[in-house]
Length: 213
Ligand code: TYD
Image (tube, rainbow, N blue to C red; front, side, top):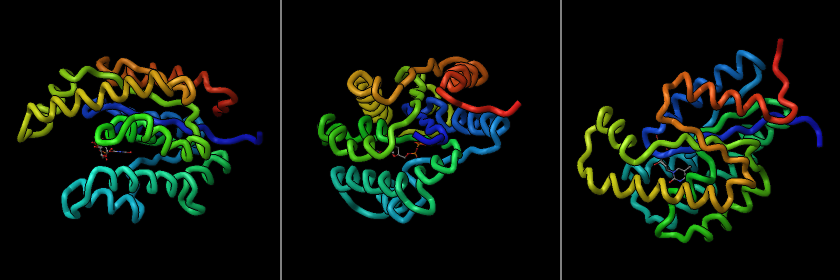
């Protein structure tokens, strides 16, 4: 296979620090290679904006339709000839992505069954498996504490239940699929500096990663 950029994914429950750490990794990798693209799902494409409009209740839909939209958004995110991840990797650009198909495994079960979501996403896995997935792990209690500091909740009980379900779905999905996608669980209750260092040490171990200097 010809040389390709690395595809690095971040996953985690609310408050896990995904956006902070993915941004810091992007900056660090960029310092070393000068050739990194940062992206996220749901994307800011037309399909992604339909999703956001559903999430913020401007458009009414249902859970199964939204799961299908996330899949369509991901397929476009992978393959789009101008903006897609594959064309960056082919140009040897590394790609750091906030959320990928593990978010679908975590957030769409129920109403969908885990195996259904995994099967539906096989089309994405066949097109593009991550070189590494970082699952930034915190407990439900730490998530609640961090969220309580940053946002006001309407219904704390419902939120706690939802976060617990998402976390256990992540764990189940990692058990089922984690080896294929090189999922690495990182203790994200540590300081930002330590989490970044743990992530960086794993990135350095990726095969054929070429850094300047
Ligand atoms: P995001 O913008 O990453 O929000 P946050 O800052 O809360 O992480 O994601 C928006 C929501 O979309 C988030 O609640 C997770 C959800 N989501 C899914 O339900 N399925 C998916 O496949 C993806 C990628 C995200």
